[in-house]
Image (cartoon, rainbow, N blue to C red; front, side, top):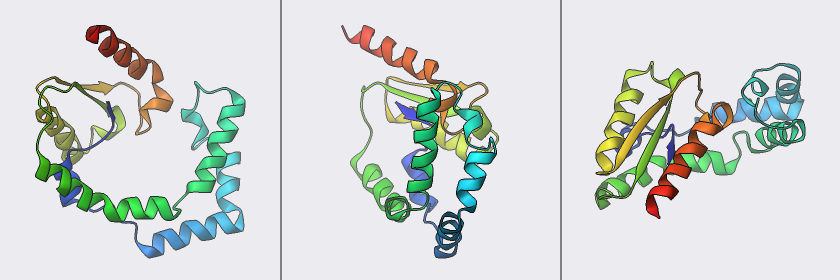
Length: 158
């Protein structure tokens, strides 16, 4: 299951490294409380959490604040390209089931859409689904689509 993930070639070519100035700005927003104000007093993040109970929404928003541009996120961006090159060097998956969920909101970016199309070539048992009305965090906006596909895969393995 890949939830709005791109092909290794995309990540090998496109660095996701976070510029130091961006990380500094977000840390400043966190430290001054502006980030908390935005998270808790607008629906920018919470509008996509319709399927979560209120107590989990609060936990999610707290984790967004805690992990926003932390060391792990920054390191992940730095290592993304090298990791993709390692995957490319080791080849395709054969017939391992691969399900690619693409956010409808991201299907407007041609390079990203092509990257997701390219993912289908990584397995002889692959399928891509553009999830209507979804954003990058498809598991927040359409968990049923992902859950149903997992159930199908499990059922087919029996």
